[in-house]
Length: 274
Image (cartoon, helix red, strand yellow):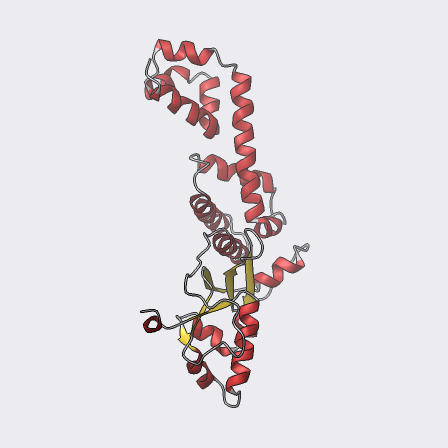
């Protein structure tokens, strides 16, 4: 007995709410033909109680949506001012029926669905900011760790050399927002709240101390060298040119503080590794 067709059936039954409704609502013959199920396949499938399949499907859907709720909780909290969160999540689940892909694919789908949903329903523009904030936070927080073999371990003021390279710890991103997404995530949703425009950029760096978290900084609150490092690694000695009066020891001390925060790392130049 071919197994492929029964696997296709079970996969679609578990993942696609519309497929389940059609199967139980009189569309069985059409779906049987579409998938290519034989009489033997149907006999085998009939031995599985439909209630058990429904229970398994509901469990998979609930688990999938709980993950999206966790990743996009700030966006969903504010969206709840305008509609029922459950209705939105069910609409997402019904639109993207290939669920249980890799997280990176799932959050891409969620971003696409929510972006179009906000526009199509005339919802406030600041929701797009919260949506993107959650998306980039999750993307950085759950990205694989990138550990450089050549990073300078436990640097000190005496151990940091002017020729050492400095770079933002990877993975990271710098994203521009129309509203203060970070501030909104801290204050939470309030009735009839429409925030004012606040053009800003956020730096998000993977947190290596805590699982699946990101470190967030407002770029306007950071020293000038951070914006320069966002474009690529620079020598320690090059960064002093960004300041009028700061001394070299003061630059090194500030860099060490950011190193201890997990924001930057020091590397020897490539010609020192030969």
